Image (tube, rainbow, N blue to C red):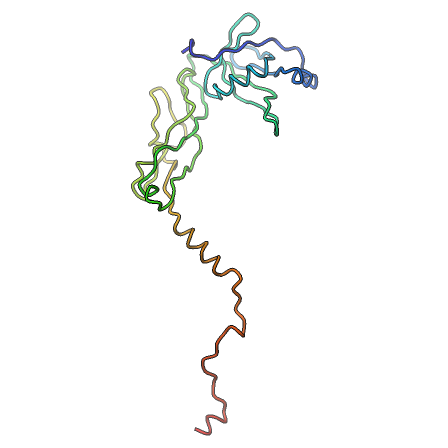
Length: 222
């Protein structure tokens, strides 16, 4: 639990607005903690923060040591540079360990259906994540979707089929489709037909006339 949490040191931040650009040039990332107590602006080392965020994501608790105290938080909003990927700013939410909160859990495809094994198509996810509710210490980052249980193309894995630990509830509609099998054959046939039709143009010269209609004179001769 608490002994397993990631920790990072931070300092109170007085620099705000456009002046934070100078902090970033010095390898410091501005952040804010909000939630239980009054919001506070903080700053922390960019390299250390990046290491912590890589491991914690947005569902693992982090202990931030700042101003002589420790605040237990979740990283709720991480702003990054569009091209370089550098962390520019982080919003941390302080949590009450006795109060349930909501978070997003990613869905991970595991296993393969027999139909996919037979190269008839592929197993696909209809959702990439679900919203969960749990106590902060019970939050999970991902849920495995085992598609090996799909026995036919008519089978669908629903939200209600997802396995979650005790203490974790999924808030999405239980009847929402999560994963299914899709045949590839029909798409391939359509692509082949399109390829055959490409460049084919019907003209008068390409149509063979089997029999011409008789003229009035020819009918009279008969």
